Every structure is written in C-alpha cells, then in structure tokens.
Length: 260
Image (cartoon, rainbow, N blue to C red):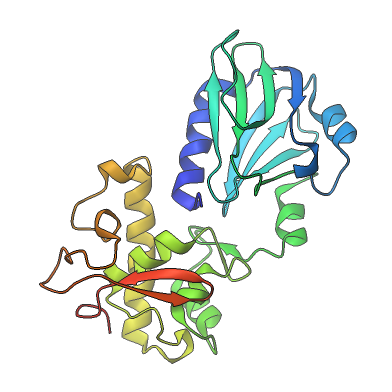
C-alpha cells in the first residue's frame, strides 16, 4: 500500500506537471469508487477547475481546485498516479482521468481498493476519516508522541493505526521498528522513555530518508530492512535471519536477533 513517502512523491510529481493547469475533461471509469458524494456531483465540482494546490495528509493526496474544495485520492493497496502525454492511451486500470490542458492525470488502481472523494477542506478530511496527526507534522513533538503511545498495545499495530498516526503502513512500520531495534509485539504503552525517544527519532529518520530517495526501494540503502524483507533472508546488520510473523492482520518482518 502506498504510504506517507510514496504519496509525498506522488504529490511532488503531480505538482511539477499539473499545478496551475486547467481540467478540461473528466473520465470516471469506476464510479463505485467515489465515496461521500455522487459521481455526477464530483464531475461538476472538478471539471473546468484549475489545480492550484497539491497536498498530502497521511496516505491521502489532496488536489485543491480554484480554492473551491479538494479532490481526495486514496490509493488503496497498489494504486498510483500517472501523468500521460496528450493523445497517449491511458494506462490499464485507470479509474479516473483528469484531462488537463497540458497532460492527463490518470488515477491507476488495479484492485479498486482506493477511494475518490471530495472535501471542502483538508480539515474536513481529517475529521470525517477520523485521522490522527500526520506522522511528519511539526506539531508532533516527543511529548505528544509519548501521550499517544500511553496505554497502547503492540507497537507495530499502534504505528499503523491511522487514527493515531496518519501515514505509516505495514512496510514502514517494519522499517522504523528495525532501525529502532524494537520487536513489533512490544506494547507501545510499556516502552521505556529511552526506547520511545529512539522510536520517535527513527520514525523521522526513516520517513525523511525515504522522501530524500524519492520513495524508490531501489535507491534505499542496502542496510535497510526493505531490500531483505523476506523470511529467511540474512539480516543486513548481523548474522541473524529475517523472520515473518502475523500481527494485527498483516505480515510483520523483523530480525529477532536485533529487535527486542
């Protein structure tokens, strides 16, 4: 699933090409993916508007249109945007196409697990989706982070809980815990203050480093867990082997020799 660094990179690429360009046509290939408004209403709010802002909140990409509201795109398990040259065919699994005056922005979601929505403001999105603070929000200082962790269960599940911290999913929760040397089953509410501080630092370090590498797995350091995220693979930091376990409905990967 695209997580905070991925969506931030989507936002950057869209801003470089689509910002301040007018939407001259809308093709909605999967109206059942529109949530919160009707498909005709969404088309009415989008067509003819100019993209004047692009923002990310958690795993959501928001496109501001003429100061009149925001198109909300969530990419589900495997979605992504593609910018297509004028006249070129749309990619397979395009569920929404915004025909701009200089390109086409295609919302490509193979498994239809994403969502297309409309909100009047980013604050409305946060309220309606019951999202917690964004994991890279400057307002998330250590004291706030510690209060959020208080009384919580398995630390991996807590990191992935979008109502607590918006933006972290299965892959980056594993990476953050690997760098923090914490076992994913440890209870967040029972971590010592030094452990919490280490977790807080590594959350920022991992997310910001991924952003700096364009969220491209091929460009991430080989010392990270991600290039070795398979059961039985050698840990890049020790002689141990990567282990897989089921946790909070997902597969967690860790090095039991490094993470305690």
